[in-house]
Length: 150
Image (cartoon, rainbow, N blue to C red):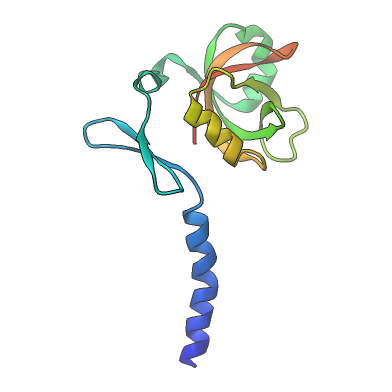
């Protein structure tokens, strides 16, 4: 009986432990510095220029409102929470995995560690927050990302 209980607990705990340890983690130290803890056991301080990007200067928007009002928001700084998905070298944000009208996001100006996160975690879609400027991206309305959070 004890063996069956032990096996049942192991059956549920092992996948949970692997899923918890399978992503990078961003934390803030007591003195206010940001640290990126990587899944391979290493860590690094987040770039100070990235840290100075204030979220207060960005207008928080719902993805649906952004899609409707994107033309009138050209040049504005916005913050939007969405599912980010990378297809080759193109990055899109969308409401969910079935959303067939994504917004194109230019990620070339992101810091290296944020680009790396996108490449490693957004192939199958991941929830992110994008801070960026509404602009033309690949000949259509989109966002030029300045920062992402996960």
